Image (cartoon, rainbow, N blue to C red; front, side, top):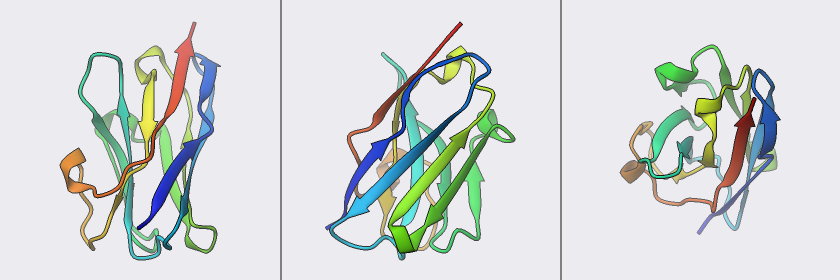
Amino acid sequence: QVQLKESGGGSVQAGGSLKLSCSASGVGISTTVMGWFRQAPGKERKFVAAISWTGGKTYYADSVKGRFTISRDNAKNGVYMQMNHLTLEYTAVYSCPGRRATRVATTPTGYDTWGPGTQVTVST
């Protein structure tokens, strides 16, 4: 079974950038759809982005289109998300779940395995 661990979170000023990483261990992720979700305090988990097995197809929530970029490197068992022009609303815990399927999912229940998440805090 794959284990996932996110990193790269931290504190950033509004307008700044962060790059999140998700490292997989245990099993390779080359046949796993990968996603990013975020959860702000007291709120439901929200879909952010997802990427197909080969990275050829990417999907984004409307709120992050043009601002975030998801990518993957199957040889390194890694998934990444570049986040630019961050605003206060993006403060949340970000998680990278995996889905052993061919189709992308945009709801949390569509994913099998989750990492513990990494905190992103955007401040003025």
